[in-house]
Structures are given as structure tokens and as C-alpha cells.
View 1: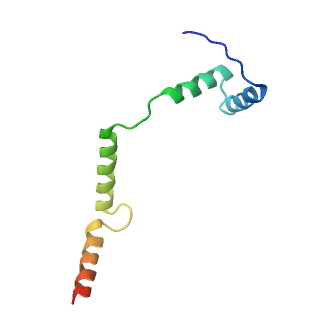
View 2: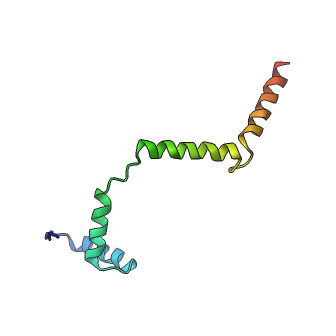
View 3: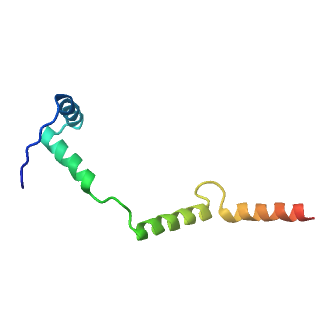
Length: 85
């Protein structure tokens, strides 16, 4: 592993140390973890997005968030039919 030295203002060091302390890790471990998180590519793939959409649609269709979609659609169809009369 390569080491580097950087200069940071005292207030930044204090904030970093406080966050490291709250997570009960050494300061260098906290900084290394924070830097790693910033460079990791967390962008979802097209496949991930499509899978999430598919799962959401299936949940709505099953009624996981209230009534099943077919009940709501049937009710809307009845209302449209009533207005058309």
C-alpha cells in the first residue's frame, strides 16, 4: 500500500477525529474508508434500474402498498363508464 501525507486545517482534523471516534475506529481507518467511498462507482446499472422498476410494478400489482392495481383500475373503469352515461 502506498502512503501519502496531506496537510489539513486543525478544525478538519478535529471533525474527522470526532467522526472516527463515533464509529469507534482509528482516524486513518476512517479517512481511508471515507476516501474509498467517494471513488467507488455506486451508479446503478441499467439492469439494476430495470429490475427495481419491475419489482415495484409487481408490488403495486399485488397490492403491497394498499389495494391491488386491478381493483383500482376496475373502479376507475366503473367511474368512467358512469360519467359516459
